[in-house]
Image (spheres, rainbow, N blue to C red):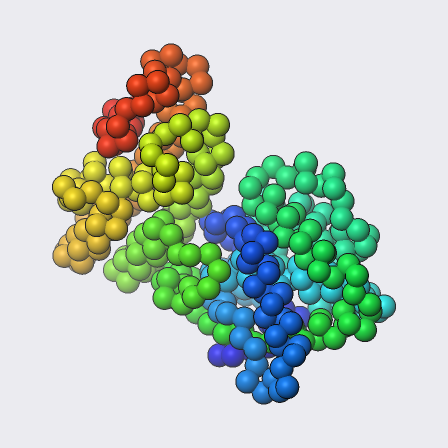
Length: 358
């Protein structure tokens, strides 16, 4: 269903589940959104409705008045910040505050718990009509850093706008279109998101993997593992970010290791899973092998549910152990020699991590 941005954001309350990836948009993504807005401003007619992308949602299990955002959280968060900034450049900003806050004065967009207070401070910059340069130093995660930088870029666009111009752009973006896909079952919504992810942050191997496991849990295990898989992947995403921030990470592997980190670790993990391991080891080959294994398994038995549970648990432990080994290189001379001086071939990482796990 096609909906206008104002239909979506003005009247509903949204929640970004903690298992979702952290905010990841950068200034270049905002530039594209801003360009879309300016193109819509120049359009002779907006009968077609300028299209901003897709949002996949499901009703929150604890509060049916709240929508969980399954896909589109990057775009929706940025649109929310942009509209908020534009609103506070108009003369009657308080009149529209109901579009951004509920009856309890909470923002209609609730980000992940660890970002909530920081997100509120980011938005407060618009109310104060200036960027708080000290706020950047308060950012504790990469997601918070990006929230700050993107809002700072937003403010660079809107700070000099006169009230009439800001109101015009506020109304234009409100009339732009979003594809709204709502699924009552959150597991099915997560399956849907892999299909419709069409713009913004590319779908990474772990996103596809989570969707694949949710698919089989939802279809063959009555969704009984949906929440467990979501929670585990939420932890895996956070561990991945911590690995990327580790000061030794650029000393590992080849020049592409950092950029392909999640795919590489998934690949090393797959080498230790007997049913999946393939001599032509690559993340894509192992992902396809996993799909083949899942497709051919007998799904009528309780063992299938146990296999899914064990696999996702083992994957989480593998990521945890990878980070644990990295941290050991800081105070364990043998680990330091193996990884930083001798620079052991990354294809031995699988065995080393399995050894540490056991």
